[in-house]
Length: 296
Image (cartoon, rainbow, N blue to C red):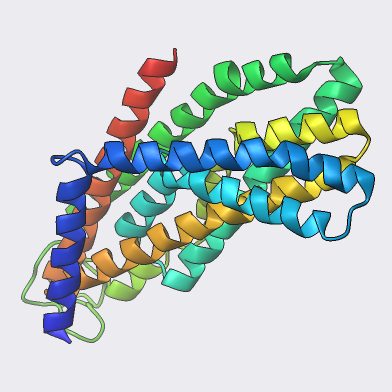
Protein backbone atom coordinates (compact mmCIF):
# COMPACT_ATOMS: atom_id res chain seq x y z
CA UNK A 1 0.00 0.00 0.00
CA UNK A 2 2.85 2.36 0.88
CA UNK A 3 4.42 1.75 -2.55
CA UNK A 4 1.09 2.57 -4.20
CA UNK A 5 0.87 5.84 -2.27
CA UNK A 6 4.40 6.83 -3.25
CA UNK A 7 3.66 5.95 -6.88
CA UNK A 8 0.54 8.09 -6.82
CA UNK A 9 2.36 11.03 -5.25
CA UNK A 10 5.13 10.71 -7.84
CA UNK A 11 2.54 10.72 -10.64
CA UNK A 12 0.89 13.86 -9.25
CA UNK A 13 4.29 15.54 -8.93
CA UNK A 14 5.14 14.63 -12.54
CA UNK A 15 1.79 16.02 -13.70
CA UNK A 16 2.44 19.28 -11.82
CA UNK A 17 5.89 19.61 -13.42
CA UNK A 18 4.44 19.01 -16.89
CA UNK A 19 1.60 21.50 -16.35
CA UNK A 20 3.72 24.40 -15.10
CA UNK A 21 7.52 24.34 -15.64
CA UNK A 22 7.20 22.38 -18.90
CA UNK A 23 4.33 24.48 -20.30
CA UNK A 24 1.71 21.75 -20.38
CA UNK A 25 -0.90 24.13 -19.01
CA UNK A 26 -0.76 26.15 -22.24
CA UNK A 27 -1.56 23.00 -24.23
CA UNK A 28 -4.44 22.10 -21.92
CA UNK A 29 -5.79 25.66 -22.10
CA UNK A 30 -5.68 25.65 -25.91
CA UNK A 31 -7.37 22.24 -26.10
CA UNK A 32 -10.09 23.37 -23.68
CA UNK A 33 -10.65 26.64 -25.57
CA UNK A 34 -11.06 24.80 -28.90
CA UNK A 35 -13.51 22.29 -27.39
CA UNK A 36 -15.45 25.08 -25.69
CA UNK A 37 -15.70 27.06 -28.95
CA UNK A 38 -16.85 24.01 -30.94
CA UNK A 39 -19.51 23.17 -28.36
CA UNK A 40 -20.77 26.76 -28.33
CA UNK A 41 -20.95 26.87 -32.13
CA UNK A 42 -23.03 23.70 -32.15
CA UNK A 43 -25.38 25.02 -29.48
CA UNK A 44 -27.10 27.46 -31.84
CA UNK A 45 -28.23 24.62 -34.12
CA UNK A 46 -29.37 22.54 -31.15
CA UNK A 47 -31.45 25.43 -29.82
CA UNK A 48 -33.15 25.89 -33.19
CA UNK A 49 -33.95 22.18 -33.21
CA UNK A 50 -35.48 22.41 -29.72
CA UNK A 51 -37.65 25.35 -30.77
CA UNK A 52 -38.76 23.43 -33.87
CA UNK A 53 -39.67 20.43 -31.71
CA UNK A 54 -37.30 18.00 -33.47
CA UNK A 55 -37.06 14.53 -32.01
CA UNK A 56 -34.01 14.08 -29.78
CA UNK A 57 -33.19 17.79 -29.82
CA UNK A 58 -33.30 18.06 -26.04
CA UNK A 59 -30.77 15.24 -25.63
CA UNK A 60 -28.41 16.88 -28.11
CA UNK A 61 -28.76 20.25 -26.41
CA UNK A 62 -28.09 18.91 -22.91
CA UNK A 63 -25.16 16.83 -24.18
CA UNK A 64 -23.59 19.88 -25.81
CA UNK A 65 -24.15 21.96 -22.68
CA UNK A 66 -22.48 19.26 -20.58
CA UNK A 67 -19.54 19.21 -22.99
CA UNK A 68 -19.27 22.99 -22.87
CA UNK A 69 -19.18 22.88 -19.06
CA UNK A 70 -16.51 20.18 -19.14
CA UNK A 71 -14.24 22.11 -21.50
CA UNK A 72 -14.91 25.33 -19.60
CA UNK A 73 -13.76 23.71 -16.35
CA UNK A 74 -10.79 21.97 -17.98
CA UNK A 75 -9.21 25.34 -18.73
CA UNK A 76 -8.09 27.84 -16.10
CA UNK A 77 -10.89 28.09 -13.57
CA UNK A 78 -11.54 29.28 -10.06
CA UNK A 79 -13.74 26.33 -9.04
CA UNK A 80 -10.85 23.87 -9.29
CA UNK A 81 -8.63 26.25 -7.36
CA UNK A 82 -11.02 26.43 -4.41
CA UNK A 83 -12.00 22.76 -4.29
CA UNK A 84 -8.44 21.52 -4.80
CA UNK A 85 -6.99 23.91 -2.23
CA UNK A 86 -9.61 23.06 0.36
CA UNK A 87 -9.22 19.33 -0.33
CA UNK A 88 -5.50 19.50 0.37
CA UNK A 89 -5.86 21.83 3.34
CA UNK A 90 -8.67 20.17 5.29
CA UNK A 91 -9.09 16.52 6.16
CA UNK A 92 -12.49 16.06 4.56
CA UNK A 93 -13.57 12.81 2.91
CA UNK A 94 -13.45 12.43 -0.85
CA UNK A 95 -17.22 11.84 -0.96
CA UNK A 96 -17.98 14.99 0.99
CA UNK A 97 -15.52 17.04 -1.01
CA UNK A 98 -17.05 15.66 -4.21
CA UNK A 99 -20.49 16.70 -2.97
CA UNK A 100 -19.12 20.21 -2.41
CA UNK A 101 -17.77 20.22 -5.97
CA UNK A 102 -21.17 19.27 -7.39
CA UNK A 103 -23.10 21.72 -5.22
CA UNK A 104 -20.77 24.60 -6.07
CA UNK A 105 -21.09 23.94 -9.82
CA UNK A 106 -24.88 23.75 -9.61
CA UNK A 107 -24.92 26.90 -7.46
CA UNK A 108 -22.93 28.65 -10.18
CA UNK A 109 -25.59 27.62 -12.70
CA UNK A 110 -28.31 28.90 -10.35
CA UNK A 111 -26.47 32.25 -10.12
CA UNK A 112 -26.54 32.51 -13.92
CA UNK A 113 -30.29 31.84 -13.99
CA UNK A 114 -30.97 34.39 -11.25
CA UNK A 115 -28.74 37.01 -12.87
CA UNK A 116 -30.28 36.65 -16.32
CA UNK A 117 -33.93 36.62 -15.31
CA UNK A 118 -33.57 39.36 -12.72
CA UNK A 119 -31.66 41.36 -15.34
CA UNK A 120 -34.08 40.94 -18.23
CA UNK A 121 -37.28 41.15 -16.17
CA UNK A 122 -36.39 43.73 -13.53
CA UNK A 123 -33.62 45.82 -15.11
CA UNK A 124 -34.30 45.26 -18.80
CA UNK A 125 -30.65 44.38 -19.48
CA UNK A 126 -29.47 42.83 -22.74
CA UNK A 127 -26.85 40.17 -23.46
CA UNK A 128 -23.90 42.56 -23.63
CA UNK A 129 -24.86 44.28 -20.38
CA UNK A 130 -25.30 40.98 -18.54
CA UNK A 131 -22.07 39.41 -19.77
CA UNK A 132 -20.27 42.68 -19.09
CA UNK A 133 -21.55 42.68 -15.52
CA UNK A 134 -20.43 39.06 -15.10
CA UNK A 135 -16.90 39.84 -16.25
CA UNK A 136 -16.39 43.32 -14.79
CA UNK A 137 -18.25 42.93 -11.48
CA UNK A 138 -18.84 39.32 -10.50
CA UNK A 139 -15.48 37.92 -11.65
CA UNK A 140 -13.45 40.31 -9.46
CA UNK A 141 -15.83 39.67 -6.55
CA UNK A 142 -15.39 35.93 -6.97
CA UNK A 143 -11.60 36.01 -7.08
CA UNK A 144 -11.57 38.44 -4.16
CA UNK A 145 -13.66 35.98 -2.16
CA UNK A 146 -11.34 33.13 -3.18
CA UNK A 147 -8.32 35.13 -2.01
CA UNK A 148 -10.06 35.55 1.34
CA UNK A 149 -10.71 31.79 1.46
CA UNK A 150 -7.00 31.20 0.92
CA UNK A 151 -6.11 33.69 3.66
CA UNK A 152 -8.66 32.04 5.96
CA UNK A 153 -7.05 28.61 5.39
CA UNK A 154 -3.57 30.06 5.89
CA UNK A 155 -4.43 31.73 9.19
CA UNK A 156 -6.32 28.69 10.44
CA UNK A 157 -3.36 26.48 9.56
CA UNK A 158 -1.01 28.77 11.50
CA UNK A 159 -3.37 28.67 14.47
CA UNK A 160 -3.55 24.86 14.42
CA UNK A 161 0.22 24.53 13.98
CA UNK A 162 0.85 26.72 17.02
CA UNK A 163 -1.70 24.71 19.03
CA UNK A 164 0.21 21.45 18.52
CA UNK A 165 2.82 21.29 21.28
CA UNK A 166 4.72 18.00 21.69
CA UNK A 167 4.70 16.80 25.28
CA UNK A 168 5.78 13.62 26.94
CA UNK A 169 2.62 13.77 29.09
CA UNK A 170 0.31 13.11 26.15
CA UNK A 171 -1.10 9.62 25.71
CA UNK A 172 -1.65 8.10 22.32
CA UNK A 173 -5.33 7.44 22.90
CA UNK A 174 -6.68 10.66 24.30
CA UNK A 175 -3.99 13.37 24.22
CA UNK A 176 -4.84 14.21 27.86
CA UNK A 177 -2.18 15.33 30.30
CA UNK A 178 -1.63 12.78 33.12
CA UNK A 179 -0.90 15.63 35.52
CA UNK A 180 -3.87 17.95 35.07
CA UNK A 181 -6.24 15.86 32.95
CA UNK A 182 -6.65 18.55 30.28
CA UNK A 183 -5.74 18.59 26.60
CA UNK A 184 -2.60 20.45 25.60
CA UNK A 185 -2.96 19.77 21.86
CA UNK A 186 -5.79 18.91 19.45
CA UNK A 187 -6.32 15.25 18.70
CA UNK A 188 -6.58 13.94 15.13
CA UNK A 189 -10.32 13.67 15.74
CA UNK A 190 -10.46 17.35 16.74
CA UNK A 191 -8.61 18.38 13.61
CA UNK A 192 -10.85 16.37 11.29
CA UNK A 193 -14.08 17.91 12.63
CA UNK A 194 -13.96 20.67 10.05
CA UNK A 195 -16.75 19.95 7.62
CA UNK A 196 -19.35 22.41 8.85
CA UNK A 197 -22.14 24.20 7.02
CA UNK A 198 -20.13 27.39 7.41
CA UNK A 199 -17.20 25.90 5.51
CA UNK A 200 -19.53 24.63 2.79
CA UNK A 201 -21.28 27.98 2.48
CA UNK A 202 -17.97 29.84 2.19
CA UNK A 203 -16.64 27.56 -0.54
CA UNK A 204 -19.85 27.37 -2.55
CA UNK A 205 -20.41 31.11 -2.27
CA UNK A 206 -16.89 31.97 -3.46
CA UNK A 207 -17.37 29.81 -6.56
CA UNK A 208 -21.00 30.65 -7.29
CA UNK A 209 -20.56 34.44 -7.27
CA UNK A 210 -19.26 34.36 -10.85
CA UNK A 211 -21.69 32.73 -13.32
CA UNK A 212 -20.40 30.92 -16.38
CA UNK A 213 -20.52 33.17 -19.46
CA UNK A 214 -21.61 30.20 -21.58
CA UNK A 215 -24.62 29.71 -19.31
CA UNK A 216 -25.45 33.40 -19.63
CA UNK A 217 -25.27 33.10 -23.42
CA UNK A 218 -27.64 30.12 -23.52
CA UNK A 219 -30.07 31.61 -21.01
CA UNK A 220 -30.36 34.93 -22.81
CA UNK A 221 -30.66 33.31 -26.23
CA UNK A 222 -33.36 30.86 -25.13
CA UNK A 223 -35.28 33.66 -23.43
CA UNK A 224 -35.25 35.60 -26.71
CA UNK A 225 -36.31 32.45 -28.63
CA UNK A 226 -39.19 31.72 -26.26
CA UNK A 227 -37.76 28.43 -24.97
CA UNK A 228 -36.66 29.53 -21.49
CA UNK A 229 -36.98 26.03 -20.00
CA UNK A 230 -34.35 24.76 -22.43
CA UNK A 231 -31.96 27.48 -21.33
CA UNK A 232 -32.43 26.75 -17.64
CA UNK A 233 -31.94 23.02 -18.20
CA UNK A 234 -28.89 23.75 -20.34
CA UNK A 235 -27.35 25.95 -17.64
CA UNK A 236 -27.58 23.16 -15.09
CA UNK A 237 -26.22 20.64 -17.62
CA UNK A 238 -23.22 22.96 -17.99
CA UNK A 239 -22.93 22.93 -14.22
CA UNK A 240 -22.78 19.13 -14.21
CA UNK A 241 -20.13 19.23 -16.94
CA UNK A 242 -18.08 21.60 -14.81
CA UNK A 243 -18.60 19.34 -11.80
CA UNK A 244 -17.13 16.36 -13.68
CA UNK A 245 -13.77 18.15 -13.73
CA UNK A 246 -13.91 19.54 -10.20
CA UNK A 247 -14.79 16.04 -8.97
CA UNK A 248 -11.54 14.72 -10.46
CA UNK A 249 -9.65 17.57 -8.77
CA UNK A 250 -11.39 16.78 -5.47
CA UNK A 251 -10.36 13.12 -5.58
CA UNK A 252 -6.79 13.99 -6.58
CA UNK A 253 -6.54 16.51 -3.73
CA UNK A 254 -7.82 13.94 -1.25
CA UNK A 255 -5.33 11.34 -2.45
CA UNK A 256 -2.47 13.84 -2.25
CA UNK A 257 -3.40 14.84 1.30
CA UNK A 258 -3.94 11.33 2.63
CA UNK A 259 -0.86 10.01 0.84
CA UNK A 260 1.24 12.67 2.53
CA UNK A 261 -0.28 12.13 5.96
CA UNK A 262 0.11 8.33 5.67
CA UNK A 263 3.86 8.79 5.96
CA UNK A 264 3.63 10.33 9.45
CA UNK A 265 1.65 9.79 12.64
CA UNK A 266 1.01 11.21 16.09
CA UNK A 267 1.94 14.82 16.78
CA UNK A 268 3.95 14.90 13.56
CA UNK A 269 0.75 14.13 11.63
CA UNK A 270 -1.04 17.02 13.33
CA UNK A 271 1.78 19.37 12.40
CA UNK A 272 1.80 18.01 8.84
CA UNK A 273 -1.94 18.66 8.52
CA UNK A 274 -1.44 22.23 9.73
CA UNK A 275 1.44 22.77 7.30
CA UNK A 276 -0.64 21.42 4.40
CA UNK A 277 -3.40 23.85 5.33
CA UNK A 278 -0.97 26.77 5.45
CA UNK A 279 0.60 25.86 2.09
CA UNK A 280 -2.74 25.33 0.37
CA UNK A 281 -4.09 28.59 1.75
CA UNK A 282 -1.01 30.50 0.61
CA UNK A 283 -1.21 29.02 -2.92
CA UNK A 284 -4.96 29.71 -3.26
CA UNK A 285 -4.60 33.30 -1.98
CA UNK A 286 -1.58 34.05 -4.18
CA UNK A 287 -3.12 32.70 -7.40
CA UNK A 288 -6.46 34.41 -6.74
CA UNK A 289 -4.78 37.76 -6.07
CA UNK A 290 -2.72 37.43 -9.26
CA UNK A 291 -5.84 36.81 -11.35
CA UNK A 292 -7.73 39.56 -9.54
CA UNK A 293 -5.01 42.09 -10.33
CA UNK A 294 -5.26 41.20 -14.02
CA UNK A 295 -9.03 41.76 -13.95
CA UNK A 296 -9.06 45.19 -12.30
